[in-house]
Length: 127
Image (cartoon, rainbow, N blue to C red; front, side, top):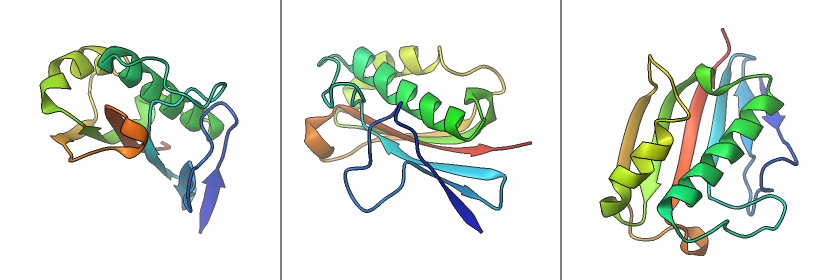
């Protein structure tokens, strides 16, 4: 059984996907979040730091919609338009998680939707 998780505190899906899916009541799959400000529909700025922060704030809002927090995240995937942004992204990313940190994959992709510099997806588990 799966349940859609939807919140107005994160950007609406721009295609045929859900913000998040809660599976069997315990595992939440959060779709990749671009750095879109849900109030304006735009990126907050061009810097990788600000875009990373916005993507993580969007994830945080979706998690809250399922009564979860960042501490429930067990796996993340970070897509970067330029791997040279890894260090700056990582500095911001590190402020959102505490030990034990989630497992993570991070890699450069050819391009991201809307010209974003970062997109982040997560998997969280309700305990």
